[in-house]
Image 1: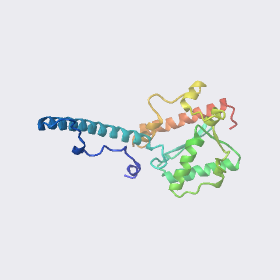
Image 2: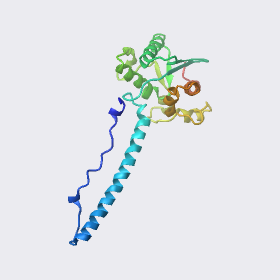
Image 3: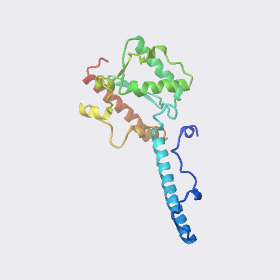
Image 4: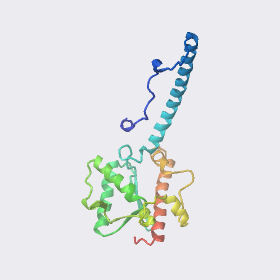
Length: 229
């Protein structure tokens, strides 16, 4: 499909080349045949291992495909302010609908000099939404870019946590450090798309709850790190 076209498999073994077999001092046809059979068996073993490794490689790639704007998409965007929150994307909204609504939210916050706070949001979320907007030919507000940087409307708590370094830390880890909650047991971001698209009401609700929990953790960290909201 559309996703598969972006997959680059690892280099494959070359076809078996009988002429490349080294027989050494073996002149006896029977011994040469035995050597050839041994080399062929080794090659078949490598071939089987290669097939297994290729399957594992593709599975690993597919599990990370959702994190690339080339192969992933925006399914939902959560926004929380104090005790109120909204999930943009419920009700059958398309990705284009979600992104259009998101940039409307951004423009309101930017005009009012508000702040949109996230975790690794400047490193991942905002660039992802910008690139997916380009895919759909949706206009990205010019104010999103401040030269080579993003608008100061966006506050990335992970960057703040790094104190000037490029240190990467998970939201779950820092939230637990501050006693600000943590990820739900048995569910990670890798499960979100499957839960969201399952067609099952309980699974969809689990995805919504996961998103809301991330927002709660982010809000609590912003308060603890003295970010003005």
